[in-house]
Length: 337
Image (cartoon, rainbow, N blue to C red):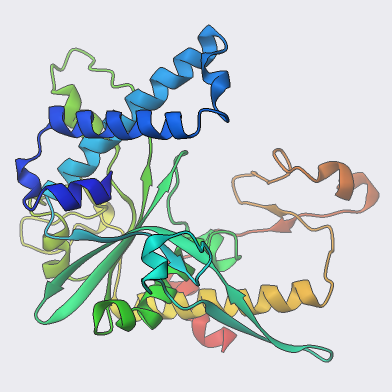
């Protein structure tokens, strides 16, 4: 969808809702036809037929939301499904050299001295050149609600997107011709939420658009934030940021990190990867699932519960994750080094 829009519309403001929905409907139908052998069950019963209609509805909502977000921003999609390492040999872009070098994790133990290479694929990279510098944002599409939680990142539970960002910043000069700078890192929730008006007579399209704003962190730079959302005020319908009437950041409505804090966070996450890789290769398989401060654990949906057979009555214990101040997490970079 993003590639087609970029190819066919030099000015995205020329694209309206009807046309955006037509484009994504054609793409959705093409994908279902191509995958017909795998998705024949979609026509098997009324429930599955409903799921097919839901896919179509969600994709139409997604298409128009993405278009509106781009229309309100100076940033534009530069790469989609950007590979970290040449993983998919059939990818035409990768064949032309459009991919990032893998992230190398050095592993040194008493018995091992090696380098592990992390691979992956970035859903979307947006970019904008400002004052002769390239600023980038990365966006990861999710089928369930998600946000960047620094508590989770500190424990190595939610580091994928941050590692992707590090790969792009460290190795992006080959793609952009110069070292790119961090603009933001976001999740986008693929959904078509229900809006309850409560007799307020608001525009339901606008209200749903607000619900689907990007989640994550922006660079704490007023000029860059204003380029991400040209209509930003005391709130934003696109990014997790807002300004007060005096032009300063509205802290309670903004999730932002300074450039130094972003770099510290990426270094911290990288060091966490080294620590976890070393632990795995040393054979650490202790039964020690995490338990967050809100009481949630991964055991409820873990596929391997019957194998590990975690049971507190047998002496097993949770690894407790404490809620931390974001400043403390960022400062841990120095401790890990």
